[in-house]
Image (cartoon, rainbow, N blue to C red; front, side, top):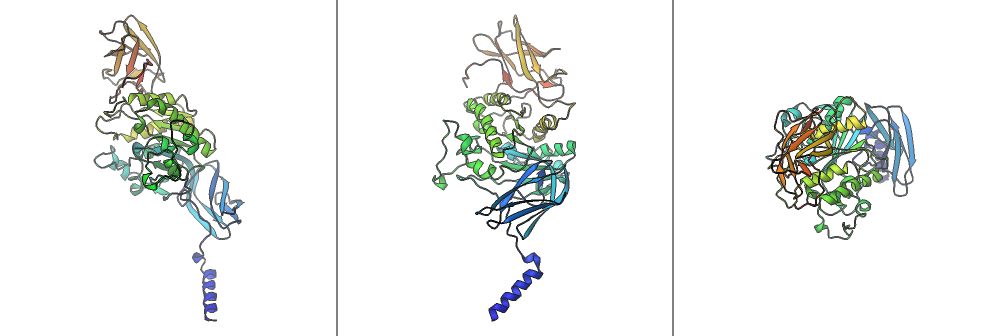
Length: 473
């Protein structure tokens, strides 16, 4: 009788204290307070509940109700129609016991991924600063920008969740958030006037193969998929698929607009393979999201004195070529911001904003400004003078008063000599007293170089070459 009375008291407390009733609904970390949902979309929301139970979502923006029945394993997935950008709103998710998500914004969501130059936080790395970081951090408070970071992790198995949470942008949250991603999102927010959600999932020193799923990586015969019974002590971030499993798979399907990517340094010694791997990774991710050919914009790796066997300009060349192979894509050149002795350039603002120019022009359809640097169009030779014309330079070219110092020219012997180059009304002309019959030109085609050729809009030309000679280094 005593125990029965205790049970009745406990039951009464639950009835009269609803806060003590714990919801059966559980959600992965990508869904939570402060999140941003992609505007004007049918966004998927998923989680777990009691098995074989009706789950209902009520959205505060229109009091619309959406429902589905959970499976035998308790998993459920519901698509919710989002309105035009705005907020804050709330979502109530219930299987009879409600769970409320508060301070939800509707806006533009971007996945921000890659290796250390995407991972580099706004406060900088130890002894490696981000230029102007203190001023940007102090002035960063903005409830219309929301941030979430996926912790670094490798896994042999596909994971459904990660340890993270959405936060409003403020000095404390942004100081440890990706600088490149922040500058990208900040400019989108300023120009579009809508909330922006940034999902940062990056890991320093990583190759591209670990960022691909088993299905994507398996299309290449030179990639060995790790066995599921691999000793966990031998799991490293270099193994194919293991980063995708832990850091992309939990996000796959989350409503978003597109992806920005900053990676390539770790693959610099295999440029020919990278030219194929980057488009394949994009195709792989697009299949997993199943929302069509979402925009994919990426930063070209910046010059640096790698001291390696292969000139990193070949990797930059592969990235430039990939832009023609990936639908709905674009590349931001960083040829002018590299640092000879630091692989992490302090100028992250240029990286983030150049990626934003691509998104604003190509994804959001804004006009009246340039979004990419000059790309060589045609080479002609008259005697010993080479003339080059360029795409993406309708108003001409500039070096901002500096002497053009990055051009080289070669004859049939394939020996390159520094060229005397100058800007003309139609492009660039150049010559070398050492080359009487020029057949090939290279621009900024070195490990470390400081690019000096720009469009008049201030966007730099990528390193390039007109030859297709087999690389010797």
